[in-house]
Length: 566
Image 1 (spheres, rainbow, N blue to C red):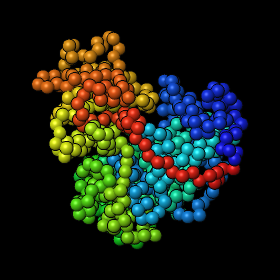
Image 2 (image 1 turned 135 degrees about the vertical axis):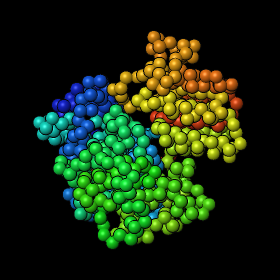
Image 3 (image 1 turned 120 degrees about the vertical axis):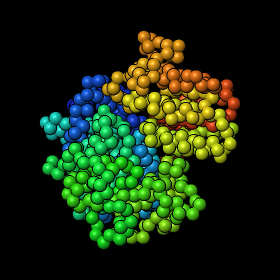
Image 4 (image 1 turned 135 degrees about the horizontal axis):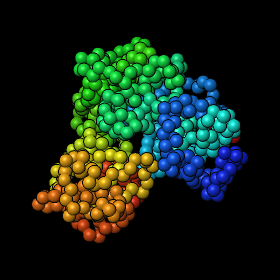
């Protein structure tokens, strides 16, 4: 990278067939990095490529360790202790990570945050002190990592490893490199991408010179095709983050665990004792709203993968102690379910910083400042665009949608409004019937089943309305189909057909619109509907599309110059 931030790189033969728009020697280095990340260099764009990448899932940790070893200027040891909070779960892990980040900063320390997915800008995934990293930092990191990997291409190919990792793996390498090596933040906060055991974020060993704590939010059935069709199997996948030696092939817990309340009770009954620990043993915390079977499985993972050194403790999901400490104050993130997430975050921060500050309690004013100032776009977010009010939440599981409906109902009571507009989309891998059923009690005058501007590739076949409804015991009524099945309806038209079946017989059935993108929906809404409250939900990708259309923005971090990559 030269002094003008132009990227100069010798293309290895493995990528010599790049098309012109993928050439990373272009003038705009950030745009070049973006073009490459969304190209076949890092994306699986065919069914064959997706299937091939899926076969490597269980080797992800090994692959990531190998890629990391190829980076040339990573010091073997940091000058200061590595401190990391690693968070898994189904519902609320991003919010919990956000609370952690805000609490740590409130106590005067620097933070690095890695989450997924992004809503509008890819740099949202990698945050420095709460802000998306600068475009130049992002671009330099992409170029540097790619150069190092291509320099090791011959060795990687001999090991049957793709020279350039897939999209999420590459972003994970970039996040760890930027936050750990370039910026050397005080505390690294990492949200698992999917699962945990075989997740790209789970490749760093827990060593004597590091302080790593793990958090588990509420589990729900999600990504069942990959993680398993019970919450206990999903817990086994997620419990892999407790491993101290990530390459350990011996200490692996069984997927088959006793799932009684008695076994679950073996877990520490409270997180309170963490404040009194004199040792620096690795700690892990789990919300007590999880089922006994889930808690039991995590206890097993803590004992076996954690080699008996991980102390798993329960956290009160009601957040009663935090509610009392706030004394009428409110959290930065809306929704009553957030009190449990904020409480979990407070315990994680206390544990990761215990050896340098043992006063980071829930009642500490700085901790309360942190939970009250936390901001997390797209999660129970209220956006006023007078005379319209937009409530945006990326809920996409049964539990998270239940929380969204509660949050929305509270907002409607405050505004003393009844009618609302619903804008909905979800992945075809999810069960839209159970999500849409939860929205039925709302007084909805119009529904838009809108397209997201982006989505992740999926090898799963798109189900028909007939299949979705019959699985729920709902007979098909041909007159309620938006498009005949033999006419190959779009996914949005399939959702609309499901909705019309669920609302059949209602006295004031809502009108339905399909297939528009965010900008088209907003234009139609403003031209043809009286001002009201608009709920955008079902998908973070959809929420991101509407935040873009509504021209919502946030400030980037400062640039730090070419600090390490010369």
